[in-house]
Image 1: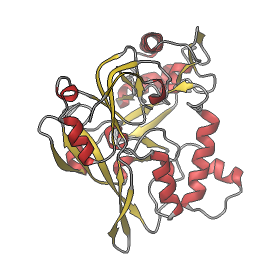
Image 2: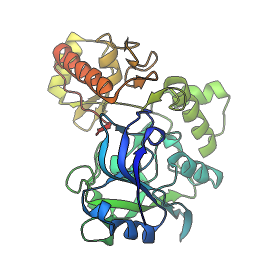
Image 3: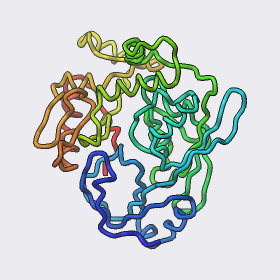
Length: 337
């Protein structure tokens, strides 16, 4: 397997940044992954493993191998009267996997409809939306140890899932390539409609009998109304995590900012990062081709010709202004390269 040289990554990241990879190669199964791992281009540097490119901001060229995960396929691995186990290739488009589940009336991922990216990125980020996180439907994953060149399985407790976190983002960062993920889905779905505007959207749609398809359609409608399509305007969805503050800090903020948007999170409170950013005056901001989306302050956008560093610098200014006004530290959700 011979990687290509000086390869443009513009079509491989949803921000549309025209970064260049020194080397680039695709792998489509476990054998081609192992073969690629034995090339000198892989062994001479820690490769960048690329999935859907939907949670990544390139601020410079990649002076090493970029390995593009294209392991596909969805398999029914059996189950029981209550659950079915589906094993999906990490290179599958996440939304395509969700649509497969919807078509078969398997419940659990309908609230995660239209999240950009690949199946393999799901457990890395512990993706979540509208009251559901990937950990709620996760069974196990298979991953390739980059240095040792062997495959290993991880069960849920070994992934240390947290809010947009997993062991693959910290302790095992850049040590494994996720190859396949197995999900545990309900044959008799249990519906979650209490978060966000789902119930209001279902009412607007005239839905009186809940189904996984109805909830998926509602979520898709909401996301399309609030978030820009990366095919039309470069973005990576939510750029920042919703910050979590202590109950005592929340009470102080609530006294000063009565309209602050928050959600209980155990004994703490999760604040809406978009509300914080909007109330610092950033919503709709544009400087050159770098900006903040006009409808959703949580989304930074590339209007066509922005450089990655311009997006990054804008995010730094937003972090500073939120800290100055609210005393709250935001954290970037997007991976910066």
